[in-house]
Amino acid sequence: MRYQRLFTNACLATMVPGAAPYGFIGGGAVAVRDGRIGWTGVAKDAPQADEVIDLEGRLVTPALVDCHTHLVFAGDRAGEFERRLAGESYEGIARSGGGITATMTATRAATAAELAALALKRLDALSAEGVGTVEIKSGYGLNFESEINMLKAARTCGLVSGVRVRTTLLTAHAIPPEYAGRSGAYIDEVVIPLVAEAARQGLADAVDAYCEKIAFSPQETRRVFDAAKAAGLPVKLHADQFSDTGGAALAAEYGALSADHLEYTSSEGVAAMSAAGTVAVLLPGAFYALKETQLPPVQALREAGVPMAVATDANPGSSPLLSPLLAANMACTLFGLTVEEALAGVTREGARALGLLNEIGTLESGKRCDLAVWDVEQPAELVQWMGARPLHGRVLNGEWA
Ligand code: DI6
Ligand code: FE
Image (cartoon, rainbow, N blue to C red; front, side):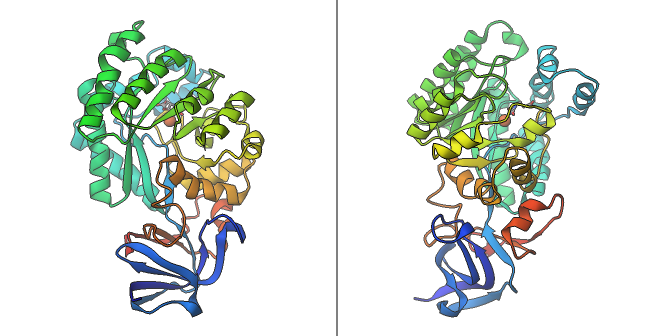
């Protein structure tokens, strides 16, 4: 069997569970055919290939997966950062018309092309840290036209950058001012029709909602999820971030791909996620930036066998973070993950959270050949350092990106 390309002389952290920690293969190689991994193993056993690329002993991991971001938005909320430092709360700022609503105003004023240009700059930062797949949510338009613009901008980001983009419709993110006090009408008149329209146009790969006291109730979330189900789209949920609304269990009941945040998730929520196979997406950037103190139930999730992903939650308010490696570092330092769990969180489990584990997330035959090649030798270095810029290069679909 002849291969197009062989990446050789590498330390492979395949992230395949089982034998060695990190699925590590020292002195390894990866052979590529048609953009996919055709073979992995020790270099001395490697098959013939038309082109051989010597990685000079570097560490290779699956290209990173950032499975929860809000990269598309206009405007900035740096003023809110200063207000919070001066003592105001995130919830208080949101209730006084700031927060998501402030970003909505700026986002509505932008065209899809302007939104894409802004998001591409942010995506550059993720790419520089080895990201090969990113999820991008809508949720700052909060009306028909602007939500569609956000999804189109996200799709454009994928086409222009070469990064695999999965889009998520998050129209149930906040109640826009024109529907103040009428959240039910907002769900009926905007959210539910948009779910159907985004599905019809092929603009959304999933549907998300913000189930929280300052946003939507579990009952309202159900209505959004029912619409997603009717449209044939998978769901995920911003769940239990500031309070236990039963969000994790609700997500599990709908067979959600993931439930995200989970600081206040109860043991019942953990058990429901475990039974449903719903991925826990941990977002330590928001926990850090909002100076939260309630930790997500990591030990309970671990014991229940709930897969744990780690993501940036990149957004202009609660998690202004464009570094998945720093997210992994924080997941260890703040939440108690092991380095292997954190690295799996930004690779294999991030892929699982997007329903893409059969395509990406580990270095295994048959998957897309999406690699991150690092100027380090040990996986733990990636997670230990902050701001180190360790990436040598990315390979996407078997080609240098
Ligand atoms: N993700 C979100 O969507 C909200 N919180 C979070 O962690 C709010 C984002 C924002 O403040 O703009
Ligand atoms: Fe979020």
